[in-house]
Image (cartoon, rainbow, N blue to C red; front, side, top):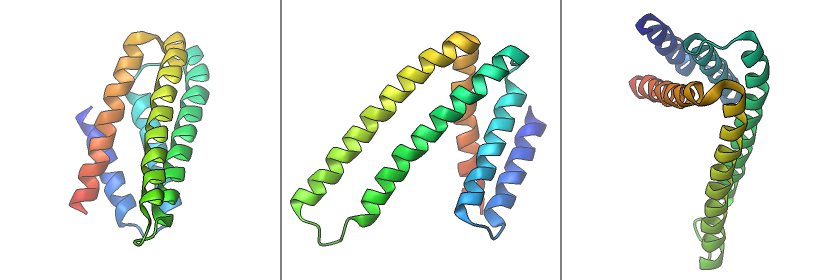
Length: 140
């Protein structure tokens, strides 16, 4: 497990140092996340076959929510009116609620496929991976 973490850290650092497009970096991080999950949760072939399409669909929907929020923030001018600022805050609240609903919906779907124990382990692994990526980025 420790060796795997070191490999992921090294690959993540290399990703951050490599001169590449941010989309390519995100794709590579997604690949590393999938590899990290697959190596740390023993899915049966039937579980794996059903798990990955559901998991990838969830990730795609989350990315779309985040992209929409980032774009709205990017378009907010420094001289925005109170009304425009309120719209951004409302959008953020709606995005958070939509993400919470996605979590609930997909947790239910994934629990049917892999069970509660593996789903809980998935949540832990996602956090571990996120911390490793942040740590690698910070060291860059």
